[in-house]
Length: 461
Image (tube, rainbow, N blue to C red; front, side, top):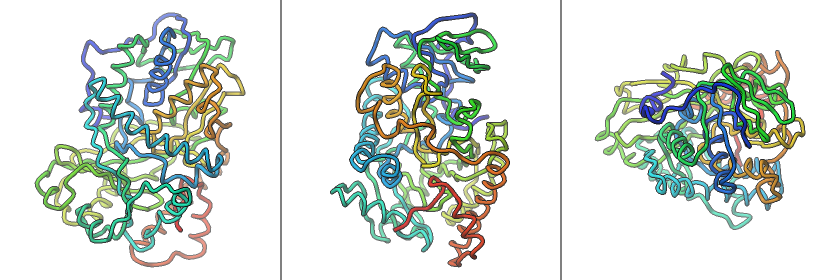
């Protein structure tokens, strides 16, 4: 089992996509059938309906990170500082606003195409569960206010505790723009629409080799695709390409799902689909489901040597007891609620915590987009617009946006990345355990933790 989400989103027999067999030709070949690949294909079809588009997927569309995440559909308003670090202030605000607009666009798309993915527009609470986390959002809010932008509502402590169902939440700010979905159902819905629009999808056809001929050729076990344009939309699996291997850090995020207890949830005050994240660096994120379960995830899990996406990133999580412990610590009143299932998956963490898009080796016929850093459910729609413009060689607000940049920075080579990364993670975990106890870490722990990239660094005022 990859995740309970995928078990709840089976494919009908008539919707099965074949394996690639033989040699075929296409205008555009997209490698990867997750959110980024599907939104790119749909954006291209909307702009150029005559294009012959092929998607080549390793397993089934949505079986990767797209189908087993927490289902948070968030904007980039909280990441305004990171955006300003990679582009101008004006462009940072434009991209953050565009990411917020995508949440409504996803809702409209699901309604227009009858995609039932449990879309709930109930907002997101950025919360503090100890004193050290209090005010983690202050810098972002002050930056936004400087441009007269106010996407967050400051909630008093009493409201935070009442609305979250736990007085472990000491403070927080609320972003009403945000939403949640059942992520695998959204991925399966996008896949259905893509097939209906004539986009050819080949599943269970992992790429074995990308031949850099002109035109480029994608080689699988059963056949090849020769295409004028190639889009790499492989999420963490893009580390198979040497040029991109050090551009992201592959790290697990791990999720547990409780059994259903809707009446107790309702009486606790956590009665709707509001998503919640604490302000840990190795963030805990959690939400309810329409049938009254809690989905509780924890970031900053484990690394793999060589940045490879190995089998340990599939199936049940080895951190189930640890993540369940975080849930019980946050919701002590629900300690008796059992864990019904759990799973893990890889995140393509970039240095900035933001995605990046570009031309592989400077070639205009091979494009890539990755680095969504655990926040791809909403921003992948925007990523699809960027990649579509790059494919079409358009000169517009997407192809020339601040996220189109070479590789987005480089992580250290092995073995420094693996052993150093584990040292940093251990230091971060120690700091956060001390934070919960109201204690201060020592100099060595603080120094090691300070080596973390932007995407793993807490932002405070």
